[in-house]
Length: 65
Image (cartoon, rainbow, N blue to C red; front, side, top):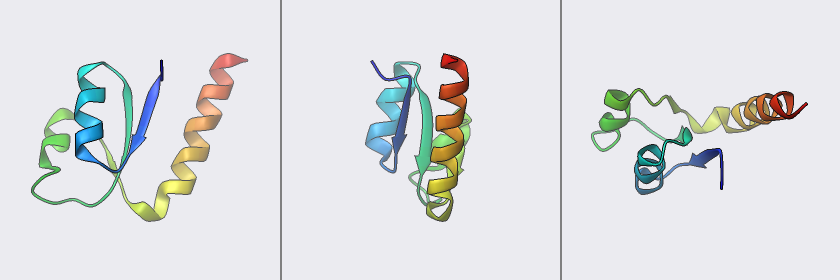
């Protein structure tokens, strides 16, 4: 089982939230994604995708060590 989900799709994020997974959502802010704000999920812009993945990987690796 995955500990976190990286997605740019709302239909991938919502079930992951329901199962208690960490979400890294990359996309744009629009009327569809306002629900993520209500749920406290940070919406990362596409230009930061590489930075956030490296940061998430470092966190996971640090937890393993």
